[in-house]
Image 1 (cartoon, rainbow, N blue to C red):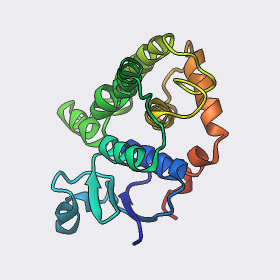
Image 2: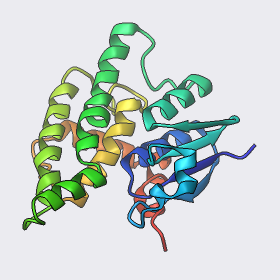
Image 3: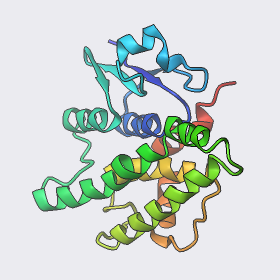
Image 4: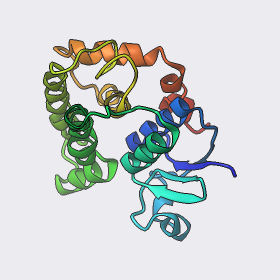
Length: 211
């Protein structure tokens, strides 16, 4: 049974699922849902996911939504070891990942930034000012949280974990919106280590941009 990923090339949530699929060695068919064109609001896509969001993953006879839930399923069924087994260490690593995926990413979602731009009367500098306002403080907090872990060379140890899958797409967004990345040595070290891994490189948006 083929694996199908409905995604959008610049979607952070889709990006992290692409990394997970690559790390798990799962071949998949990518089907683009163009968020800019409004494909996510079509009846066809709403039948896949009533939230009108990406990604949606069809795998093992299931149709899964929500990137963290999808990654958890892959982790549990493919033995990826993305989080520690010990409860305290697991909670700490999960909190690190969620600081981006649950707190930072949603407020910088394209639809949120667009709405903020509309409410501002398309004020000069929007939506870039909005993105930078949230992304740099979020990364500074992540950098501080990393002090509780040994980067060897990834966020929480010697192999990529859930936090890396959440961080790297956010770094793409940070560079896209010209966020100041000074004072983030731990993050930049992890970013460089992940960039050397084919699973991350092959998931990069530039590899999935429309022709």
